Image 1 (cartoon, one colour):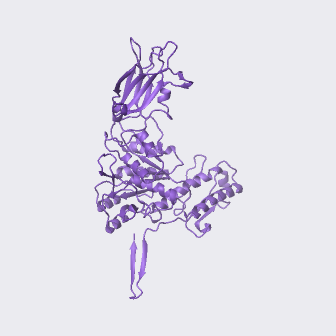
Image 2: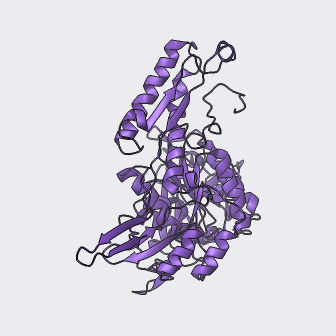
Image 3: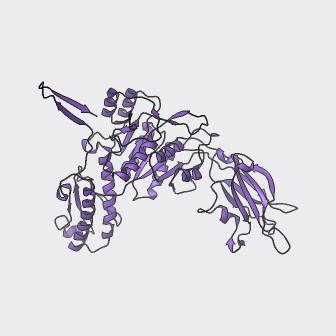
Length: 524
């Protein structure tokens, strides 16, 4: 029985280990990892960033910038959208010692000029040292032809006009200033969370020089910000804090990937967080350079087993987005492609369909680090490692759908994800009952609402059974709602479902009529 501490809907799945007690809601993709630039969490406390396309991602985190080491996060998100992903949540964890690049500008006073404006990189890292600023005169004047505004030009990775990435026209250091009735105070314009800069933030140093001479002095020297520091690689606590940042979305299931994180010391606590949350599934990357037997040994030695995690092998080959040389390729972790296939399968077939098989081809993958034999596949499958193989006519496909759970009931990815999906939706559908009169009228309403949903889910192939009665049952009446539970403010709803299991092994028996022989052929 869950601990009842707040008004809401609670699910107790321990009483029904082979059934689900929740419903719908497909997952959103989530990626957590260090990268050269982008919104950082924490501090300051920022919400994870939702992106809806590769361009949306690069607007916030930059693209494949060759000035910095290749970013596993960038490669994973790029792979995700290539594989059919639609939206994703990105968290860049804090790195100890990370510092914003910055630069202060003095005002226009002809004598005793004072600092008036500080320009900082939008987030910490060495990348900010590649931001250059020009201050130009604005075009707003008063009756005496005094210039009342200034224009701030942002350049990135160079000082030429082709390096201009943003231009903020006719802004002012006067907080109450307007231009044609629209606020043009520099901080309000540039720091806006909706229409502001992707490269810089501004700080008013509150020069005591009277306006408009408190505007920054004109300079066309393309002065660079300085002092940006990347800091150390995120520690385990930084990564777990980043995972907990997703708790800001308590009703949203996630498929989570931490690009390039392959060690059990880090993965164990993160998978534990996913299990504690109950609606998060972790796609685990494989390290580079492993043989099939070494990968199987690593999976066997993870030190944790979980129905809410799955690992994929081997690494995949793609056209190198960091290179301008035609034909150059790069090996990367497969997690981004796999998460994309999860989301695409949810949308086209439903969460009950295994994200694997001939239809689960990884678009954009040109090859594999290792070609797996049937023996290799058998070894890896028995260690709960999902294989990636190349099949003529289909390309590189996902050829496995196992979780890291040792138990038969939760062995398969679509089974566990169906449970997560159903748990989430049943809670959402039952939320209307909170604070309603707790009697047979409410019980019938709950049964009606949940039955409609489960019937539709069964009709879509989500549950086994020749009819709804075989696919699920719901009990919410006076048999499990007693006078005592009613007085305690509890409504008990018991839901049982018949889950779909994937056909992992197809056995074909061929009979030879003339010779009386029979042949058994197994395809995996």
